[in-house]
Structures are given as structure tokens and as C-alpha cells.
Image 1 (cartoon, rainbow, N blue to C red):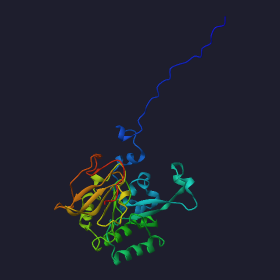
Image 2: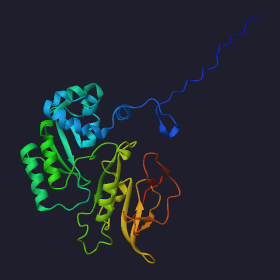
Image 3: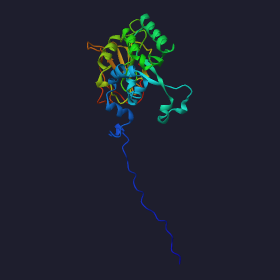
Image 4: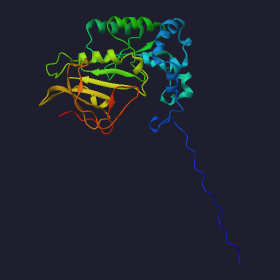
Length: 298
């Protein structure tokens, strides 16, 4: 007789699960690099270092966590050196492809630009940006070839015409996408300008809202002329058959828009119906619905 041969088997050892910093699963560790540098120092604090240290001592004096992190809250990204294509992207090549110049993003926040404002932007382009000036799809203006030594002068010129680069990038409330015809179009249902001004006063450059999990983009328009479906939250003017002119509120994550109507509150919004889904962020007083995408109001 021959003994039967049996393959030796062992029970598979259950794989150890490890935290990957997924907040949705209740995990807070490990922090990714972005969350780490935000914990080490508030991003808005970098403005003083730009003015008092880096602009005076030059590019090589800039701390890496500021250069590749907190600078974004001031609207500054480093440029890529010429001659390197997309195959060079990645942490291991950052030192090689990082140029000593910046792209600077200027917020517009749905504001009309006067002739004086446009002239100021044009002069900045001529004096500091090698005649570059791009207009982004969210109405921001972007300069290239900016030296850190020139940033204070550029900020002063922008401030003189009511513009800023603060929180044009980073994990914070970004520029508000508005209509270039706000307050002037005969087809406008409501002028959002007072609401935009109040929202900026409350939330922009506010440390309580400068450390969001990711960037937060918004749009407000009394016309159907902004791509509100692509924003985290958007208010669009509508005419209600019973309530009259008001706002419909939706987002890229909302299954259907929420109706909002003006009242006498400071920012001009009163929600009459809140989303049935969605969670309130602990660091933000805005609730965003989840699921589906917001249709244009009929």
C-alpha cells in the first residue's frame, strides 16, 4: 500500500490593517505632508516671513515647508525649470525641476475691474512678469516669472486697486466665481455683490477657515453665466412663482439644489430647505450635500 500524500496547508494569517489617515474611517494618523506642515504652523503666518525675511534674503533662504506648502495660501507656486516635461514630476525630482520663480495668482472674487485696476495689472505684468498675464477659468489673473524679492511691491500695487493674492491657492475658501455683469445686466435676477463682500469679510484671511481638508470653491451669480455645477457650493438667481426673486443653492455634490431667499440678514441669504444628506465639517460652518450633481434650476 502506498500512503496517500496530502499537501500541507496552513491557515492564512490575517493581514494586519494599518491606518492610512482616512478621516472618513475615523483615522487621524499618519498625517500626509500637507496636513503635517499645516499643524506645525498656520499657513497664513507665512505672509510675515515673505515680507520680512524671504523677500530680503532671496529664494535660497526659503524654508521648504513654506516654499512647497504655505506659500500657496499667499497665491504663490514655484515654476518648473524650462526643458522638463511631465515625466519629471514627482517628489524625487522636485529639487531638479524647481525654478527660482513663481506663478502668482490674483483673486478677482466676481468684482468688476475698473480701467485703473486693469492698468495696474498690466504694469505688474510689464515690470515683474515678463509681459505674462493669464486669466483662469475661475476669473483669477495669473502672473509668471515672479521673483520673491518683488512680491512686497506687487502686493502693494494690488492692494492699491483692491486686489489680493491671499488664499488664491491652498486648502481654504478660494476666490468666489461671480458674473462680470453683476449689478449691470438687465437680465440679472439679483445682484450678488453685497453678499460676496460680506462673505469675503467673514471668511477670507480668517484663521478659523484657513485649514480646511482641501480647497473650497464657490460661485454666486444672479445670471446663468457661471459653471456652478463644478463648484463645492454655488448660489444662482432664480424667480420663484410664489416667493419671487431668490437663490437656488447647489454644488457638484448636491443631488438637487436648495432654495434660498433673501432676507434682512447681513449676507443676504436665508435657507428655506436644507440638504437631507451631507455632513457639517468641524472646521466649517457651511453644509454641503452629497450624492449626484446639481441640475440647472428650471
